[in-house]
Amino acid sequence: MKRAAGIAKQPATRARKAAPRDAVAATRAAGELYFQAWVARDLDRILARHTPDSNFVLHGIDGVQVWKGIDGCRQIFDLILRALPDQTFDVQSIVVKEDFLVAHSIVTGTLVLPWPMGGRIYEPNGRTIKFEIVDIWHFQGDRIRVKEGWLDALAMHNQLTQAGS
Image 1 (cartoon, rainbow, N blue to C red):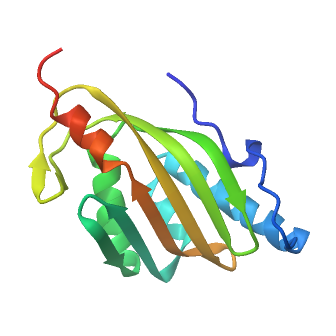
Image 2 (cartoon, rainbow, N blue to C red; image 1 turned 30 degrees about the vertical axis):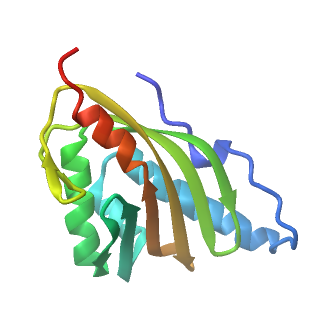
């Protein structure tokens, strides 16, 4: 199984106007803690990295979906963790600024629960799927205020609807 590449190991993209190094380093450190919570699949640690009024915004085949507040985030993150219990993240690139982090990752996992997407429910098919996601984590201090994700839902759809091997 491929280990997830951590945020700390990825080079930061240089900005036109350099952000204060301490602020960028603090955002990178907060991002690493958040990433490690996802790798550990620890819902409480994930939520501890969010502000109480945090939102999760998912851009995909359903347009834009928003889960509001820490309870909304808990609901969707719990579903993600349970639906893809073996998911791994292979971080391809990151950009870190003073108050946000952008991560492009390849997610690999096996869907084990029905997954609502695009006005339909996808049933597990026993196959490992792989898709790309771009996340933007907007920080307020060392906590995430808004987590946005752009999901390659077409890749998920194609893999979840494939007939036999």
